[in-house]
Amino acid sequence: MSEWPKIKPSGDSAMLVEFDNRIDPEVNRLVRALALALESDRPPGVQEILPAYRTLMVTYDPLQIEYRSLQEKIEGCLDRADRVDLPARRLFRLPTVYGGAHGPDLDRVAQILHVSPEEVVQRFSQTRFLVYFIGFICGLAYLGGLPESLRVSRLPTPRTIVPGGSVGFAGGQANAIATDQPSGFNYIGRTFVTLYDPQSFPPIPFIAGDEIIFPSVSEEEALRAKGKEAEEFL
Image (cartoon, rainbow, N blue to C red; front, top):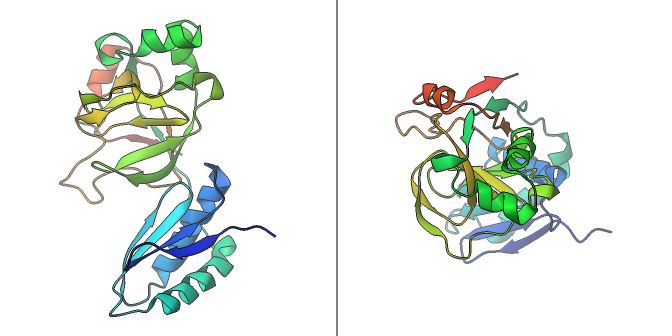
């Protein structure tokens, strides 16, 4: 019998549901299904439902709902999570210019992996990345699916500022940051598609369960996408 999922308190006004201890599309599907099931029948007192790679955090007002009552509600949602219909997966194309000033870590990553920069770009740009969840600064999409052949460590000292739209990876994760921000990832390219618009709702184009590809284009073509929304492919 599996020890997962686990439900446990997180402070005095939050509950954490933990699934299998691995970053895996099927585990994440269960997280998203539970979030949707709970959202569709949200009990009074639940404030936020926050999915991540393999966990779901639920914050609540203990004056409106007791811990035990919320636990029972979550357990009921878990029982039907396998039957929840998730939103159809969408594929987004973010044209990316690689290397040079827009990809300061490309040559170094290639040296670490003992391949050419062109090979790094080919492997990365041909990968379909799964959006596991949205979080951090300005709706950053946490992406999984990075090929094992591209696994490198984070920078020993994070950069204090990385330009918005920078595309990179570290460990088993990849990202395209939405705004200028600090980061310890290795950045090999940049897209100029709008990834965050505070004047729109929702302000980001992706949701968990979507997929993203980063095709290699010329700098001229990448710049033509500046200010445009992410392009969706069926």
